[in-house]
Image 1 (spheres, rainbow, N blue to C red):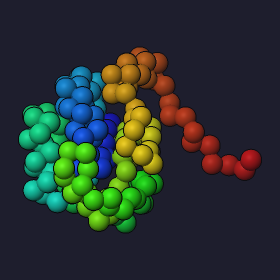
Image 2: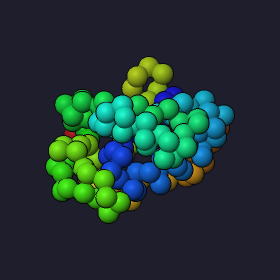
Image 3: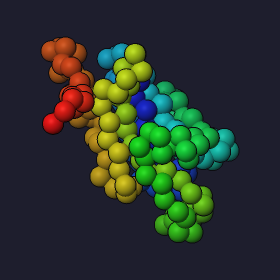
Image 4: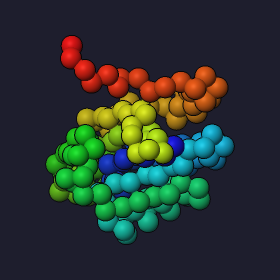
Length: 148
């Protein structure tokens, strides 16, 4: 599986702390067969700055997520409010956070999308959940698409 962590961008101090935790736990995800990537709509330079800020050694940090692609993933889009609490200018438009676990067949196993930068899925708990999933061959939930 692949864990995709969509983050708001370099301007977001909460994102930096969140990605530091994902960087720390990326080896644990790898042991369980899960690759990790973090991506935002930031350009290459801002993505490099974020990778440096979180001291990314294991976590791959991508960049250039198109806002139409972000919306296709179900991510919320926000407008700039100027400089953040850490003095970095927000982009004119950017996506809010989301975490997805994607199966090898490119289907969604798990997703969580936020409309705000606060209260995100806990990566330590996700590692523990993966242990349960693997041990019990636990199938994805929420896949019923028939009539109600």
